[in-house]
Image (tube, rainbow, N blue to C red; front, side, top):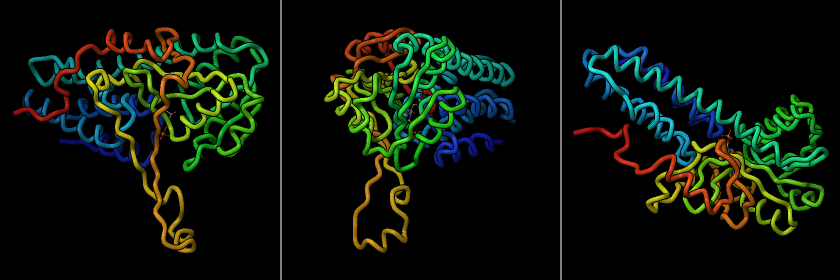
Length: 315
Ligand code: RUB
């Protein structure tokens, strides 16, 4: 039962070598495809059980980004075939299709989101979101000159990745510490963020600090735009489930040595927070732009009823 690729992908997701909701989803789907390719299961039931186990290993890595379970569902839900060879082909094809859909969705979302920007606009970013950057990339391709104020996004500084991607696009970047955001919002036309999950009421779950930024943006009258493919819609929230917020290691916030120097303290490191819909102007998806309150209709259309999860063990 070779599950090397699954184990190494799961470890990379946990360690954040693979990070960001869309990338996590794509790599998880890829790992399931690899598992199917390498499986030496002797009969269809063993193959199915092996794939479910692989999906559980991936599922347990990071709890907040719904794109991960959505990806696993997509790949495993329609596993079809009477023989191991047929099942293998079916999983590999679903994995390929999922990753293609993801790329196409980001491309479409990027085109739609680019329409929000005018030539000369300044955007402020938080964390690193490939969906958010797709909107900037398309605007730049359309010939618009944009500038960016990039929050560093403690504790992991994913803002540095955003700054580097924006420079590759030729966008002038000003890097600021997170606490300078309010000071610079007067110079900004749009706040642009991604999402790890979107709840049925239109709440946006994204990197810690997003909600504070959104409150500040409201105060300054700066529109806040969330770029999120429909893979980020959390179907569980349709039936009242809440999204689990991942708590990460304290060492990301303060080193052991610094801590010893300070004295006896508690440290908390939540990776994400929840921005209520009233602080969000628009959610840009590959299916169009939505006021957060109406995202629920798109969620019902796309995900409908969630039945038993395909990675759960069967009796
Ligand atoms: C990343 C993060 C990103 C979303 C969206 O958190 O909060 O804004 O995942 O990213 P982490 P994308 O670094 O902890 O994974 O648009 O690329 O899916």
